[in-house]
Length: 236
Image 1 (cartoon, rainbow, N blue to C red):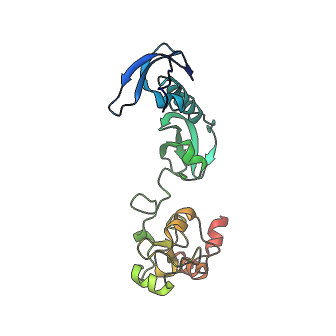
Image 2: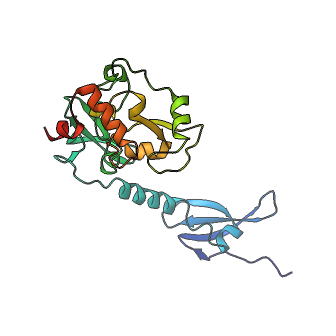
């Protein structure tokens, strides 16, 4: 094996080697280098010759700043509609994404990221989501004389088949989906619910499942609750 390579005076990226600075605990030679930015740093010779180290760290910091600048680019969403929301004004940032203050059709407001608006993840201030904050709770939409749906009975009735994708749903994570959502005043009864994969239900969001094989019985349940057809209500 020949003598160790002398790196003195050699350039590696932004680094110029000044002198040998000894060895580390693994007997690898260390070299004192100066960066083009003026910073001196001691670096293992193998990192220099293999192209691992090309600066004192300033190159990486500059690159990260460039990437952060690219992520901070934003579309002007002011005045655009996303579901029930109207984007009003920019409200700073949420992580790397631009945040927007939006007014909801129900009179509420919300601050959310432009990414969530553009990709359809956020369509209301929360008023459209079934649950305690919804404008119509399950209790409000019960059909007199008809019991509330029971998960295990719905699973058995549907054979565990998702009504949206027709595949067998995961028995541990399946959703009880309202074919006509509560936000559309769909009844909370067995005829208006069906087994759904969690992913299918999330993608559906609060849409009406017009193409579902369960839609016919769901529409009949809607008529029993409201005394009129769903299609007529939507045309009003």
